Length: 373
Image (cartoon, rainbow, N blue to C red):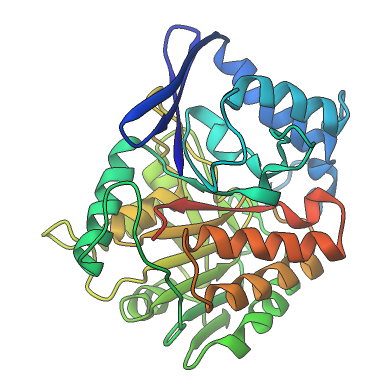
């Protein structure tokens, strides 16, 4: 296992590749923030994600959306450009798990598509990946897990972990507000996505349509072991605590980052019985305001602060059938014992999905944020 840490300062991206007790590589790359952001944009455009999402992404009410950007690079060229900036030269088959501590939009980059191996394999073929929002989060959540399990180190747990889904909460395709600033397209595929995961749950609570109001979500999330949101999500650079939110139903339909963080108890240990894992299957949930230190203030980090150990976040959402299959395979693998869980179960689920659909936009859309067991 290794840590890939990025730090941005004065138009320089500092990239550190670290294993326990050793800095393998330290590289300082002259680059602007906009050029870093462009690494994502070029890959997304080359997969035509903006075109595919145009009819399902939220849009400002009364305004015609701008035409999606056209790709200027092939996917292969966009990935090669990104790999030259993001991947250490010393990375090879020895490393079975990679923890990424990002800067700016690097946390929303689909690392699994990169090809760092001499045989041309993708990263997903041989290595699982976890995104840690910051070094502080990495240490804090790891300590929380060690206290719960009673063993391990800051780098790795010496155990295999499986999830049983004793009492999950599912939120699927709420009745979206019709009078807000944004128009939220209906997501009928969200219900199919959740339905594909229900057979793996012992007892569960599902809130969909008009039932998915904020008060009910907050009430039921306090006692579940997994919370699964299949709905719209929004992120914003300004005032992220109030402008990052998941869209629910009712008169107050926005579950904001502030609402989520406030679920944390006064001792700082998180809500009693707060879910270990949260799945955010919604557009933009992996994005958020980025600081030069790499700390993101997106929805996913809000759940980590509140008490979750991992957040499975969608980087994009454009194909209902493939997403439903991917998440059902993830839940299946999650119930088996694995090291590097839940990153390894997600890697296996994405490989399963790639076997059915070759297009990367159908299988590479999720990543793990938080800390593995």
